[in-house]
Amino acid sequence: MTLSMVLFLIGMLGLSCLSTIFKQQDQALAQQYIQTIKHRNLVIDLGNGVKTNAQLTLPAVGEGPFPGVLLIHGTGRVDMNETLGYIRIDNQTGSKIYPPAQPFFQISQYLSERGFAVLRYDKRGIGANFTSLDSNVWGNLTINDLVQDADKALAVLAQQPEVNPNNITILGHSEGTIIAPRVAIDNPTKVKNIVLMGAVAQNIREIGHFQGLYLPLLYAEKVLDHNHDGLLSVSEATKNPVFSSMVGNLTLVLKQNITSTTNGSTTQQLNPQYNTNKDVYISINNELKPKLVEQLNSLSVVRPGEKCNPLAPTPCPIWIKSQYALEPTLNIIGNGPQATSILILQGENDTQTPLQQAFVLQQILTDKRHPDHTLITYPNLGHVFYPSSEWQTSLGPIQPYVLADLYSWLEAHSGLSHSYVTTASTIGANTSSLNTNTTSPSSSTER
Image (cartoon, rainbow, N blue to C red; front, side, top):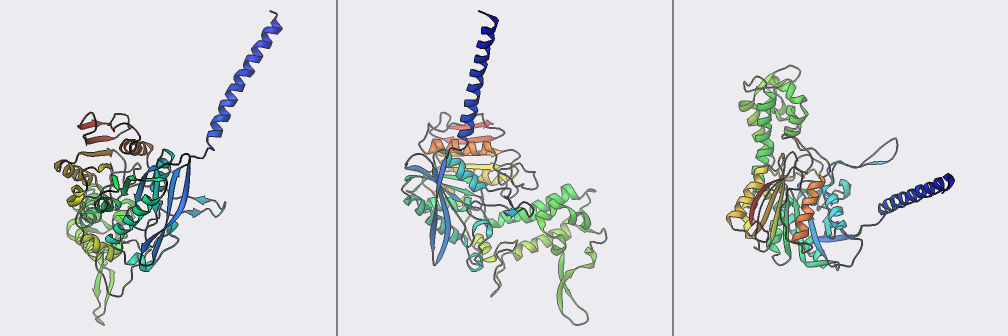
């Protein structure tokens, strides 16, 4: 064979290889444009003239019926995506700048791509990205209203032709973990599984005590009290962003009623001893703590004729009073059907619903011999399952391994795969489970 023929064959072989590589690249690029989910917009009638928007996401391929998942959002002004932060428009480019976290949008996309029909809905009185606010509806809502809304959303999900009405999971996040067990108890034949993310076990009064009193006092003692003398620099505390996120405006917290000596009128003003222009100090236990207690107690005061501002940073008093009257989830979690499987996912750095909330829920389920419950905790993750410090929840997308754990458990408990068995494959998670269907009925593994 001549040299020219050898070079010709080598050239042809190279072109063949390049052609194969280009085909593979084209296929990879083409796969990015394959539709994996579809959706249908719905309107849910909540009763008494109140309606809300919802969206059902479905696998793009197949007719079903698919296992269904209902998403129940957390506390506050929350749309169907559980948007945390506003969608903003860049003034220079005109492009949208999306908020740091939309947990329910993430979950719906992830699960629907993998075979589930997922329904999510705007909280009553709330529109997309807070653009539609009904102050009358919002200002008068109670926790019982939210439970009834979830009941109605469950009925709508079960009625969809693509959904298997006998294979439905309800997933609650934060306040949604108070609602989800109650929906399961109300609908014992409709709910197959419960998922609790950022779980609440105690009454909201105890949660508020943790968020508004225990945590800021601990931060003041451990971080801001440099001399360990029980005193706090007002100037430093006011400028500390973490402490401000816990207590709000410290100057406002320290304000008190001052009665004028000239005309006898009473106004709220800052006591001269707290003048932040000087580096004055206050006692953490004797001055700051009473003010924080006073602030907590004032949240539930309903003043006749006073309407709740839906844009205010504090919750509406009517909602708080209804929460205070509610029996803790810890007392009712074991009242649901024994056939209902339960998954609890908890960030170990959760500063909204601390880790101990999940532990006591697991303890009561174990004590009541609930046959199938699993707890997975995640080091370094906060309330929205994004890396966070022990003092403050950071906002960002749910970590991929959390979504993978959620899907793996749901896949097994929705009849799509073999029984769920905890493994050591997930990054940085701790798993404890009691599951009569697994090869290890009671296990605890470091993951």
